[in-house]
Length: 427
Ligand code: ATP
Ligand code: MG
Image 1 (cartoon, rainbow, N blue to C red):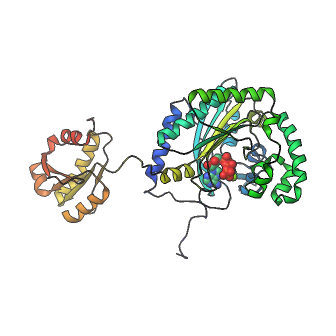
Image 2: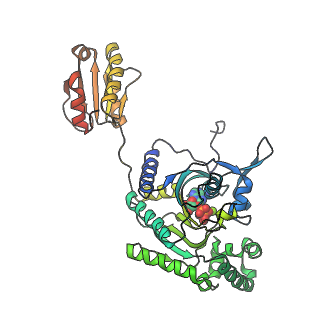
Image 3: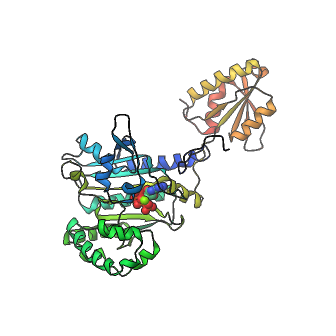
């Protein structure tokens, strides 16, 4: 293998065996989001580096050490997007999507972060992101959480827990920050190097530390909830009441903060204990300040991103199977006439039966070898053509999944017969 080229570490091929589950997840997500009136937006994969520095914040894991940044041929500093919110907000401002109107948007695609690759953590990974602009009340927060809960139901996903917290306003966080810094100074010597540095540059980030010794020290730290302003408190309790009345279970986690700088008020994560350390499947919250901060008109906003690799790993763990998409029919044709007729007949069947999944055997070979391929394709039936059949203008239909006799059907009756057998509508 040493001579052959390999994919970049942490960047995965998604092979044909895996894509049915991906497609099932993607189709289901699109269906659920459309069911709530969300519309898709597509942004470039590359943006100016400055956009991410400004929106994500200089003192974050992402900007400090995870971005794929390069200088292009014009000398501009560009970055492969590490997440989608920054580009989505940039697009909304640029195209005036957020002036005096609300928007419910979603997007999907690859994101890039130079992290240490491990299960559930890659350097290229896929997210589905949802962003809502122009709505400030707790009703939209509730809608988003109900929508994610519905998504898990539709996918057949179990054992994910909703964790919730409120980060309050900028002022509330400033007061909390002072108290936190005061506390962290008393345990300074026991903090790891990252946290010691962050104590100066961005102390809230210490709460997000993945170091268990640091997490243990935080047990006695002041909690944000005690510093919340009255409005944020009311917003949060209205959200909790909505969730209660809709029967959505959640856990309030007072130490939940988001890894990104622009969040305030509601933050949430859907977590599981089935994926080791990479247990967050979906994470989001409010970012009411970001649009204005990036140069747009002040616009409240709320959103989330869900990690498709983690979601799919979890579905695999739980034995969720995608719907069967193997072919309905495999056309077996032996003989010169039969092969020619096989291709034409296949086209005619595809015209007549929308939704038909049909594989035409190519490359010749005996009946035996073609039937072997037909079996391996997973098709329900083989459509069998030999030169004699073609002369009589008929074909054999042989069930491949059950032990039943082959039946012979005149070409003229094939469409109807197949529609009946396969449960498809005729065009
Ligand atoms: P973590 O704390 O696990 O590093 P994060 O706070 O950096 O996550 P976000 O930026 O909020 O993650 O991204 C939202 C979701 O995207 C995560 O909850 C996760 O499901 C997924 N995700 C983030 N980084 C990666 C990655 N490197 N590989 C795979 N999925 C990821
Ligand atoms: Mg991260």
